[in-house]
Image (cartoon, rainbow, N blue to C red; front, side):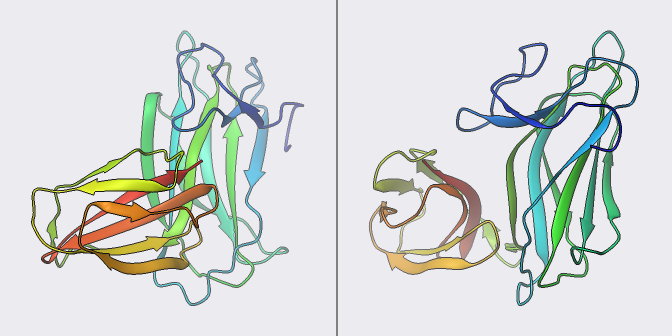
Length: 219
């Protein structure tokens, strides 16, 4: 907390009730219901980003106005526990539905932190969900693949990957810190995910030179 008494909390709806979690049953939220500019940050655990090519932060957020009053969100990083915070994102306009943002993470280190700082000005609060840190997974050299993945979120041991493109499917799965946890090829439409822990992953599928990257949520 930098000013005021409000803290980030785990919630299932914002102040207006119009925003619910993007995935799962909970999300992060901040609101103080005043115009004092109360400010607090939610900070990641330490992240080792060394050896990760072009690390990126992806997150989804909302910040709904209340009769014209607008809360604000800013994103920072630091390269060590004692390092200075550096701002890399600022969001001061109304966002009423989930909006995804991707930011490059500069100066990766072995002791890296990300901070989300919210300031309250009597809006309906700031919400965050599906925060992910991973290596930049580029598909610029390939065509974008048409593909469906279901179920997603996953509650069982298998997912189905369907595409009108025929051929074997090259599969790569990454954790939120960019670690590759699966690199395989399947000839059918079914992928076994029973060995994955609950959490968020990035799934890259390539068929005949065409690729698509999707988020995968394991419950």
